[in-house]
Image (tube, rainbow, N blue to C red):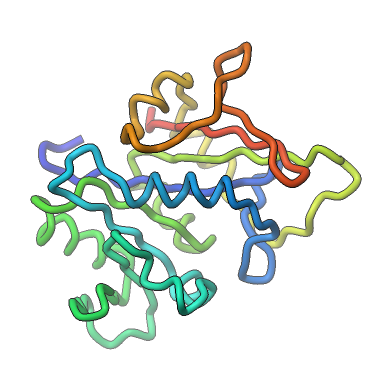
Length: 211
């Protein structure tokens, strides 16, 4: 990784084994503990003088209830080909609009190198598929249903083949070290993995690094 480069991190919850991430433009589950983890990870930093950016596609932005956006304590970057300007920073609303992912990343790296700690990509499926060549890490919450007969419908998936080819899963100690101290993880089990159960789902928090 080049000196001074802001790390790019994909963060996503995936239903195993096919890595399903969404259905009809939204999440197929409502998991408050998983959302708390997402909020803590993306809004906290190790350096108190810095903040994080979150990049998302327009549909992901619009799926967030208006009262919750922009996501607080983060630089919100919304990607859409329909935006006229290449990189429009609306400081009053704490939003950046960009007409491409590449343009957004270039401008963030060049203009905010001293103030951003990490750039988190938070969806949706099309944006995730674009970042495989350039992301440094993936934070993946592996989700399984406890009742195998009630698997939720999925129509959007993370590319498991590309993830396996370019990234390797790290041990739980690496995940703990990677996250800011404020992030709350569940108690580790006998095999030291960070696992919890919520609303009929089994969740495991994991870190993947580029090989």
